[in-house]
Length: 405
Image 1 (cartoon, one colour):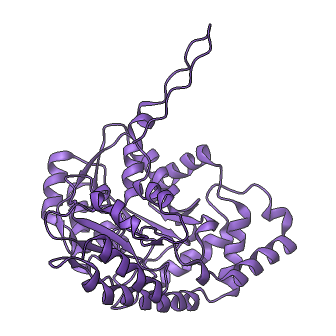
Image 2: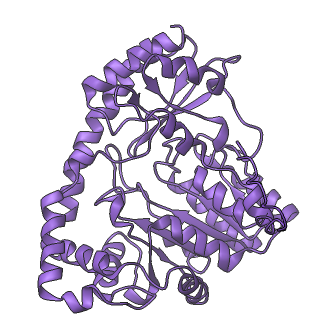
Image 3: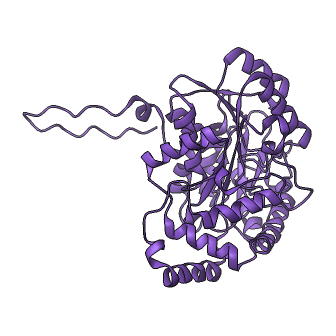
């Protein structure tokens, strides 16, 4: 992390007190740093995690905002309750119930993006020094949240199906953690999905040993192949100890900053108190516009159209990888989501290789920052949803040149 030089103190004055230890200890996001370096328009950027902007339903969202501001401007522009607008929580609850998890509007807390939900949970659950268990590799911004809370972060060993239940049970007995954090469907960064059997096993461990599960599901609706796998939160063993996070960022628009958490009552109330201290409530006009959008538009049909485009882009990346990556590389075939995870042969360091790849006009995210434990430096994350198939093909040709293929 680069540290800016200290500002000179004027003569006759004393320095201001230092930043909090947690702020000094936690660096910025390596992904954000890479995006800043690769923001040139000529760079084909596989490093981001942004949905394709040309697929936003701009007319539908604009119409929803217009109607809300024309019909209920006083309400839309006013303060609102911390828990969120009932007109939004009610259709959200119906969507979750229809997907196999009986939910009432009062079970939900609307957040300013699901990223805020993670911060609220850290405030409500974690004291400095508490242990948090995470997948390996893990969503990078979750590592930041837990690190900023002063938690001790321990990676759970696993395989292609996710965290190993036996390893989890051993760690819970030894480390006495507060929670396990997981993105079980189309995970960021790997794109993997935990099978139903693995989810059930994790729920059983949590019930037997006493553990919160934070189940983050920002990508679950972006499925291209296979059958939907039930949430961990729907498993009988986990219903009283799982927090389910959701978001409109990947299916409607990230700029709305609308997410939510579903949690048992006591924890949900604690998160609401934490939110009152953070921002009072999520913007009212955005909540009401999203509620109107859900009432007037078939969101599932919109998601299906987006998924069809993303599927084509995933397939284009899968088709081009054999020619782009060195012989002996391996990669997965995600059934949905936005990311693909690749591993180069032993001896390759994707962090060290990135500058020469960027010089070819393409970018990826090295895998090392996603690891809470010992990193696998030969891994990398590729986002396939932002570019067209033609741009993906060209980007992979550039990647091959940058890797010396």
